[in-house]
Length: 196
Image (cartoon, rainbow, N blue to C red; front, side, top):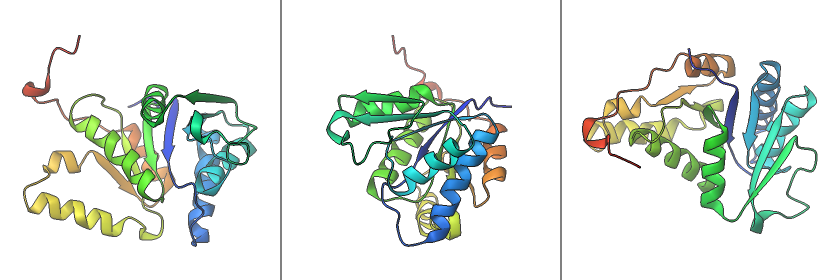
């Protein structure tokens, strides 16, 4: 069983136009707090990001926000967080979120959300970490993306074992259970480089 003391959530800074996404984001925050799992996220009080934080904070959960200096505007940053960490740039932000987290969950979002998801799953593929990565497929939001990934497998650009690094569910509790029982694939020998 994987210990999940903290989970980083990647999601949109916009609300989108599906109220179910907002409700599910709030519910995820609640469930993390109920399980005593620290929420690590991008520090915004707006959009889907803000809803996850609200859900966690309403149930007295610990919430750590990580934001680069250039995005640190008073109207964007959530002022009531347990901890706010400021980085110099986006790259440092992602590294810090990775360091602070035992696993990752992606909710609906745009380009930034996808970029975070694919960077963290690429790091896993390269053996840089072995943390579970979940995709909460609320209302089938990511169905087309999953279809694209399946096409990559069929056409020889993505190995099935790497496709399987992405744990997918449309139910929060089931997704967290999948993350707890996730067994990482062994890192290929050619990737076991001396990184000292």
